[in-house]
Structures are given as structure tokens and as C-alpha cells.
Image (cartoon, rainbow, N blue to C red):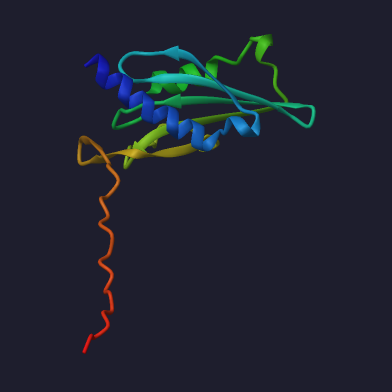
Length: 142
């Protein structure tokens, strides 16, 4: 199961990188690991003299656990090392997950690689596309 966790979080790393590109100045650091696959990240950048901070929770659960929401929301209060002019809270969850517990002010990113079909977490692979057969015109030789 350990290698399964590693590969799943490799996909999470790709999801984070697609939303917070290092070429745009984002620095990504894993902050905390909760039980199972639940993780919290702190993502920061300086732009135009302003520090932007995103507190990001990641879960593979069917519904977003309240302890993850509480951890992400509470981790900034009273901590002067995270003083930021622009602070946002966001979550990354599999598609079709229940996000009703996430506060409405938080942004939700849905994973491209994982989704729920019923109560089962499914890895969504890219569809295999076969190249189209090209019709080749052949010259008639007489």
C-alpha cells in the first residue's frame, strides 16, 4: 500500500503544479500529513511586492473530512510567519466527491486523474487513441 500512496500523490503533485506553476513564482511545500491520504500544502509567491499564500487541502475521501478543513483553516491563525496580504483557502478532491462541507469561500479543484463512480475511487486513465488510417491514393500504372 505504501507504493500506492506514493503514486497517488505523484498525481496530486501534477495537479498542484498545473494550478500553481513554479514558472509563475509559486513555491510549494507540504505542511502536514493527516491520516490516510489527506495532506495539507502551503503554496506561496511574491508578486508585485505582495505575498500571496494558498492553504491547500488534498483528500481522496468520498466526502471532504471536517478535520482536514479545520486544520487548513486553523493553521494560519496566530502564526506571524505566514502573514500574507493575499490569503486563499483551496481544496483538491477527486471528481464527483461530496464537497458540501467545504466553506463556500474556498476554491475547489477537481482532480483529472481520479473520480468517484458510486462509492469507488477510480483512476481515470487517458483514453487510448489510435491514429486514423490515412487513405493513400495510388497511381495506376499502365
